[in-house]
Image (cartoon, rainbow, N blue to C red; front, top):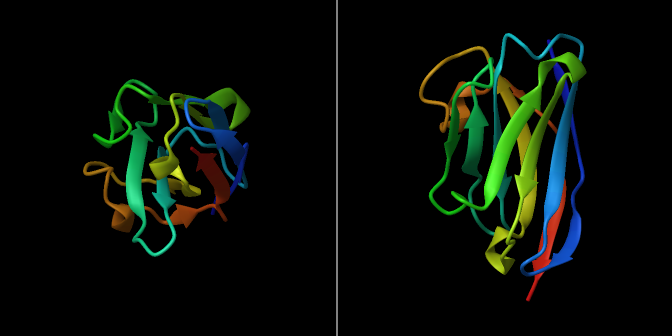
Length: 124
């Protein structure tokens, strides 16, 4: 069992940046592939980015490619999402998730462990 806690959300103007963190407890992060998902009001939760257990491979939704960067520090049991050039359409609750499964990492059904979410609000 692994517990995930997100932090770093907040309010920012369009064009700004935020860095989200996802801290794990209960077990080491290293066996798990990790991802960020988000859910905007009135919409379904969608994939944002994923990173393999070693950090060697990353995947991004087309909507965030080139603006967001996912990374991890297994020694610190933490996964990060650096978000640059934020847009109002990035406004959502952002969730961290962990899975022991492999590809496809963009499907939320692959993920057994979820954090409680952190709110990101981008104003125009």
